[in-house]
Length: 217
Image 1 (cartoon, rainbow, N blue to C red):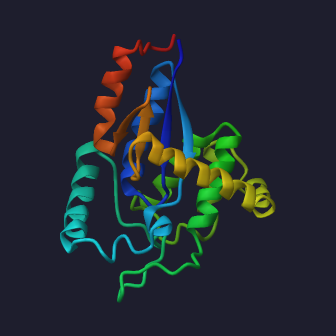
Image 2 (cartoon, rainbow, N blue to C red):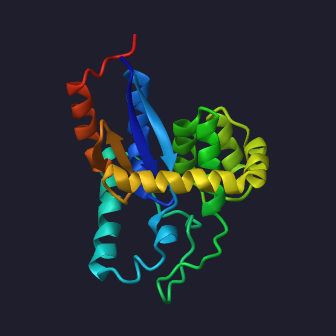
């Protein structure tokens, strides 16, 4: 019996990047399928979230994300450019953003083409993997899309023509995310149970095994 779970995921989240290779491997080895639901990051959904948070939140986050990458054995550096641009003086996020809307809509388009998880994996590795600066230039995204079995030019054309429809689906995913039990990413919801954070992967797999997770032939 194939198991299914909802994956709420953001291109601005390094933790989303850190969990994705394990989700790809899980799907390759086991009879389980992710229902990919890309969402906008909280900096876009709630622009004042970080400016009003305790400064220790960000200090701890910076320490933890590098440690977490080292722990799971993935290369990591802060994205250059950041998928969501911030005013460093005010720690606020302008409404007009040059990258995150395209990325998120592309993620939804990839999902509709049956390659959502593969696209997230390839693109997040380009953005957060520490080897590529200016990931938005040249053919970095096109090559990542190709590795996922997709045509970036075709998807960009579709995104330009269907941005309102795609955003409506993304908005619905954001509402479903909160109904699933959390507002953050990555969030995996299996059988109505939320697993928030890349460090909940082992618990997610453990719960799936209790529900009959089986190896693929």
